[in-house]
Image 1 (tube, one colour):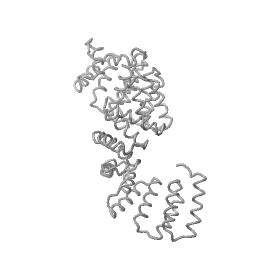
Image 2 (cartoon, one colour):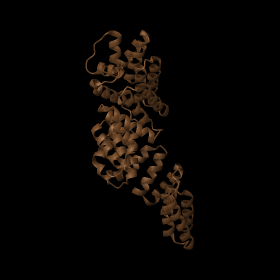
Image 3 (cartoon, rainbow, N blue to C red):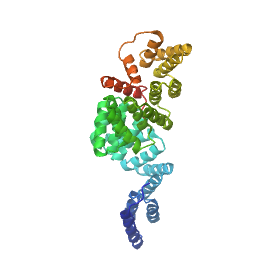
Length: 385
């Protein structure tokens, strides 16, 4: 929590004097509370709130302020209960519903966030913070069609809020709309060069465009700003793999799966980086990590077929290959493994893409490598968050 500035402390001291001199002035106490809460001076805010409650403890605005104080203090479930009480008394309201949504989001109830905010979004009655909450909740619930429609119809409503633009860029990216995602990310970064979601999307967009240095720059910045963000580390790992820095790629991807082991695409990136480094047992362990995320993902079984073939375990290779092809006969990894195991020719970009992942990147192959890695990062269709 950021400590109040000297200017904030001076203002609060002045409010303290004024409210003590005029203890029955509820408007003055309300202003004092707002200043204290805005300054994150929670002890002072609590004092002003208690005095305000002493004047009229049942006033909806006072109860609403108590919920906001609880939310700022990190007491999310208590805040949620207070906001629900206020809402039951006064009915649906953008301000109340936005605060209740914030408490619900902190409690992990993303369905409630959508139910609370979507009606107000349709009337363009949300603040920037509330737009970001709604888009983030739709993203986490993987309700991509709704999110894309909302971004398309309402983007002007949050066009001046960097956080909302970043959230919109990320949900558009994971919905597969890269042009819109990239545009939104650039708008967000123009407002705030440290907007984390926009940096992640810009990094992956650069990777798709085979601009390895720009991808590394964006994603290095993202990891520095938020070291506990697995998406940023995952993206940095793929970017480092693109530019041929295998030790850095492995380190970044390992950091990502340590923070969040639920994204199969990141495990795949780690497996390929280990194959490129000739660490076949390590690659097998990474594909097994992906298997824990989804046992019905063809790319994982294709990867296990490949490493089993590389280890000389023909029976295991054939078994994994059969599973992969049953799940998806077009799986690039499975078809590449099949080519190595049986000498079968494959058509299209599958062989080229996989071969180029394993080779040092060169100017001639840059676009193929970048697009192959971009696809690998998202091939399992799961959001990166």
